[in-house]
Image (cartoon, rainbow, N blue to C red):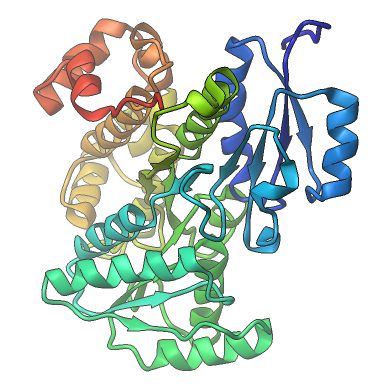
Length: 392
């Protein structure tokens, strides 16, 4: 915690009411600004001209970061006067000279297509956000284009129905018309949860009839749907890092700033849960074991502990697991650990020496050997090859 002092600069941070994405964005901003000894004044309200004037008079801030959303379309650069400002994921297009950080919708749509095509299914659908926002349209267009590139089609549920009851009725009809089995990509986790509700009403089995994938990895939704929802987790933390670095550069350089003023961040990873986990053979014990591994693989979980959850011997447990998934219990644990290591390596502020603590390895050398065996690269080589420079 940074203690506020009279000589410390202040940044006003207007946080979006969209709770599904706000915490990780703010954490990314805080991570950079606290190191720069900058105070962040968090404001959970709509930035209006009057409130900005009052807050500027009180705080005398050096700049502002503004998270925007579909409910804040009318928040523009002009409201802030001469105050340096960075817009985070603006809902509408901004003048090219304005500082802004965007979610790369194309990369997210393409990742969704790659993930769902690995299920081997041939029927696909996209369910957009109900209000037909630009980000939702871009996400769906990228998903459909990636499928077309691979000779596959995509049914698209029509946007525009804001009444949830009528939308759910239309969604049931839409899902019933899909060729089964089918893979459904939803614009975000809220829409994916509606897909699961509609499927349950008509007795459609998930993932046997429908594999369902959302976006945001908002755990209050994903961990409480039936079945649990697979989701793409955007790299909101990196986006926060970019926004913080941009506002520091804008304050320091002002009109002399010559770097790119609009940057983007993409998806971080896919969190696989039961809604897309189509087992070769249905086995409730295997499904429960997969959930256990996804939650605890990086907390010292062993194959022996997983096997102990089966109502049979260790050897038979591994046989059942392999029959349902195509690989062993230990391989599944290693897959989750490798994914977590890659996630941490993508953060330029994460010390390489401490990564093993977050991946379930007792010693740094154990992780180094494992990572090199699995990827053919050292941790530093992987970071150098895969991490784009985050500095504007």
